Length: 335
Image 1 (cartoon, rainbow, N blue to C red):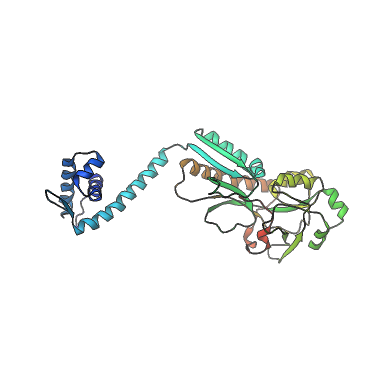
Image 2: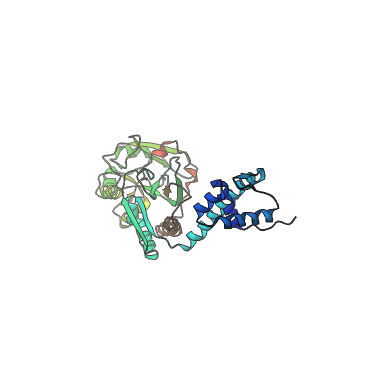
């Protein structure tokens, strides 16, 4: 059966006539001549071979098939509008403001160079960066995107975009560890002063595992210093205030220089999920979409390069899959 191609403009005119209830009302709203609307409507009906609207000198009456056809036409026009948005967005250069929240240490050690590179590529974009170590509410606080590193992620209505995993390590100053003597087992950690980030429950745990398939051991500790500033915790650890669980990218250089040493190096901590959260996958500005794509292009490679340079063979998060366990309390930092 032959299917004639309807003119999208004629379909739009028909829907407007139905919506406004008259040719006069539609012509006034659209700013076109009433005679043109009448002519295009007649042409559409001729193409379709059916009467969509019964017209008299006084009123219009939409036929049964006209009502049904109108509903499908509305969906067609909506789809056409969305398709046009795809083209418009592709042609529009990223511009405007992006509000970002991120822990300060994450910006200084990972995100900073990526962010600067993005601005160099897109000079019409402005970035408002809030370097905060406190938990943020992306929607309520008005951020477009927030970055963080956590051993576990809470369920959320937000979209979570993971860029890779970075090991967490337990570290301490050489002098502190020398005074403590040889550490052979996890229970030896209870005799050492500790440092930690804020724990939601108020209790602090290290979740340690000797190998990929081994059982996890939970060690509670009572930190002398609690801070969500990881650079502060790193400095306190270097000065011998206590031992700390830190993302490896935070303490990698200190370990290489020998001012920090691993504590119980044969025991592993849950890795940190390097991620971003944002409210929805739809309705993003070209600037935000381009920024997310730019980060996704560069951040995983940066993490891999750092781990290779430090002798890591990658991180396997598969064995740390119990978010309801004390692992959920593992010290990390979060949006």
